[in-house]
Length: 209
Length: 179
Picture 1: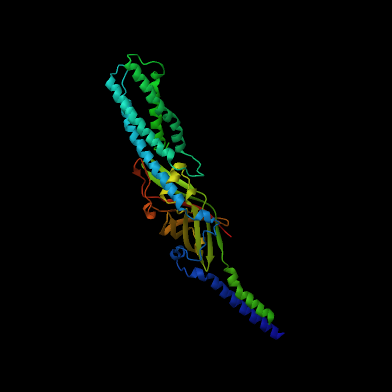
Picture 2: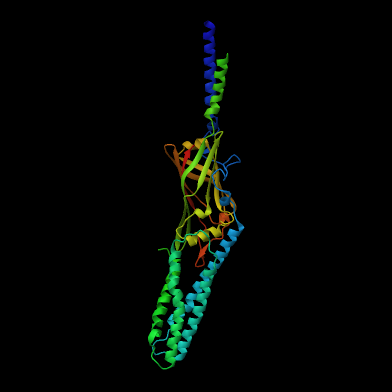
């Protein structure tokens, strides 16, 4: 009986020592960071850190593709050219508008206006060709100002075809000594709408509204 | 004698049981990059980041990653340009690695050294400050990483021939839970 009591006391003592040691060991990582400044700072991870595969990303998601990058590069390059030509086109476009001859214009004024119009149309279709030929990125859902930018092309695009045709008709009528009549009389209005849509298209992707 | 041995073994094993590796999982996140241009202030947001943290011997290693194309600025054309200039086709992921002491999980502010891999560059950011708040078993971490376009050797995109500013701070709002 006495032996059992001694044994129990010994065991209890040993257990207490072990628990104290356990508690100390548990605290050891914290003790390593004596002050708070050290405790809440960090260093970048080592080899034991999780990997991208641990996060559940597939190999297709994590591995780059030179072909994809090349397509993106080509697209951006072509759209940069589109942007530069588009901005440059505004110069002859506005000049054409400012030099538009009135109802009592002479032949040389009409020729200058027509020449500028041809330059504008040429630059315009060069601009458009870069946007049309730029590679499309699969899976892209269009949103934002680019939708308005593209929608306006359905106005200024046809306008840029119809306006010179109506202008040529009006010029022909004037050269024949006639007053501009019929569909040709819409030349000014169609040109105005085309210019307005074109400038709005630039503003749509330039200014946040 | 046998039961004493058993108790001793159990007692010795207790510290190790108590120190069993803990794991953190990123439950939800909002990562927001901000870029400035004279005509635009742009925020690109991603909610698609995934993250894990594994703790061992009082240290926790964290990895957070998000697909570059998951950042949405509200303009698909701009996002594709962003993907191009950041070489997102070739390097489709942005990853952040850090190591924190386990004791940091009880602090209200944490400073972390980050290794960010983005656009084919690995850039260290030292002593980035984050705030931490707790909601039950969840920890919310917020802060801003002071990234710049030049850090990652990104050719600054331009609009109307005017380039964006160099600063590209990334706001972080993450909710972690222990596993």
